[in-house]
Length: 113
Length: 110
Figure (cartoon, rainbow over the protein chains, first blue to last red):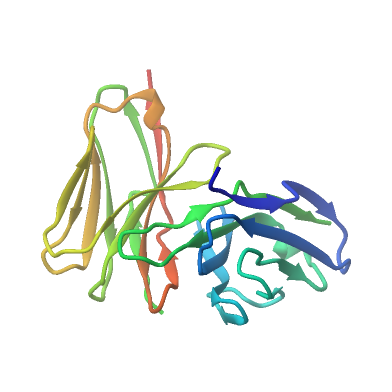
């Protein structure tokens, strides 16, 4: 089944403790992206990647890191999480073709205390 | 960066009534996408519009792209409880950087 898989689905952590949210897609998509969703603010892009080793900042990159060493994986790293990073995170991918939308993962609900 | 403004933020309708959400931009858009997110779920791609004045239909859903390619709308005819969720428009800023509107939350009373 074509899908984007994120792990974990839920995570509660403490301020300053490094964490990684994994994202993997099995559709051979070139483009991958991370979004955070907060009430009233919609989906805001954190980072995106156009291909292996090619990444760029989105609208809210502060406090996050990403890497794209393999085409299928695009992990999101929080080196020193803070409470304002408590949010619902989505990974998404697309081929980038003309009429292709993004396929989203099921989401990761992160709470930083 | 490019922004897409979406209205209304929230709408509560009686089952069987129609529903419309609007998406507006101050700049000309190359194309626009629409997504639906069910409560507790993830966004699901519905459709992409590319051409000026384009109208596309998916069963009870009608999508329009304005002549000037600065606005778009999603209209649902005779809403059902299965239509409940948040509807987002999204537009490409450059490359494949997709920017989302804030979304319209639809609630349907049965």
